[in-house]
Length: 498
Ligand code: BES
Ligand code: MN
Ligand code: ZN
View 1 (tube, rainbow, N blue to C red):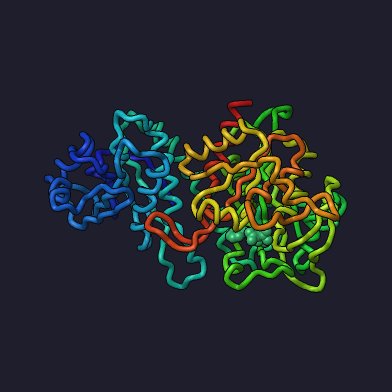
View 2 (cartoon, protein in one colour):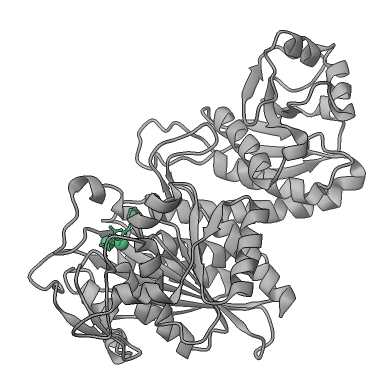
């Protein structure tokens, strides 16, 4: 998809669709009054007829447009301007993108939102809008003979000459982020017979090669050498051997601190011998979303050339029942020596992460973020659209919460009080892999905490938001690519802070 910055007057820009954003407040801001005037009062008439509410993400196509080169007009609501934030701006343009992408080869022109004189610089707007368009025109119908969604042929961002450079830079960043999100979505949406540990590792290696990022893949013998017995136990039931992918991006000096991104990559989670019901298993191709997110984020960090050192770790296994599966009652010795009593083979993500986290610590991680579709309990606690945030270091948590907020991604911190550790005490080992009925998202995080040593660490439970059960006007069902933006933003802040 081509993205160009247009400095011609907007009325002269040829396109299939011209997108104009409309606030909900009564009366149009000056930029919009000018548009209205050119269109012979079309917008005012629509508003009088109550056909143009300006409600957030409400779209209104207009097929006959006077006095302009555009063939059609798409009006999209911004909601109340004084309440506008990144997530809402993004939602509005994503809804617009979705409504324009049902036909092939469309050329789309976009006017910036009427935000002159607000705290919205043009580069930021261009970034958010471009990401929304890049993500919004790609669907999950990878295997449909009649796809419902088509990438735009070209996007033309219409700005004044004085804004050209800023818009170009913002749009470029926005495109890189959008493509990273789409990469993550594609990997999560692909079926588990295509995406398994070795194939996902190969894809990561290929991407790393294209980006000039160092890639190391640990296969089964090397994982055994590294004593990753917890990860290996989860993998034991599958005919597909596990992998650990390590991607080293070095954008800063060798002695600069390293940010570690750790992703849960269970390419299919059947539950193992503690088998899931068919219903609960139905979306478990998405259980590698954490790994896909760290990969997506790392590609963006590398393409943006952020001045920071980041290492991404993808712990890749398949959790299946068979004669070679690990069993309930097994005791595993994790890589760092902690012994784990297995009481449920469906609590496998924390076992994989345990070994990968301790490996990241030993490889010199200065700060850690892990991302995992870890617990159904987190979805019970926070719902399907909010990321659970847990950590052992409040300033590091705060940095991630602030980045998420600025990216328009909803995330909420849950506590890790000491007493939760009692729930995962075992009679036979140091710890057990389930913590009982209450506070399941927290006891899972409490388990992970035992493997990060003293490093500032944040765990993001993305079990709810990573995979959407249905489509909405502003986003496609299936994989969402949630937290790619936030992780990239965290890397940017980490760079400027250290
Ligand atoms: N991958 C699941 C968690 C999950 C559930 C992700 C729903 C996305 C949507 C994880 O491996 C799991 O099975 N967790 C168990 C833990 C339990 C056995 C302690 C769960 O949440 O039920
Ligand atoms: Mn599971
Ligand atoms: Zn799982």
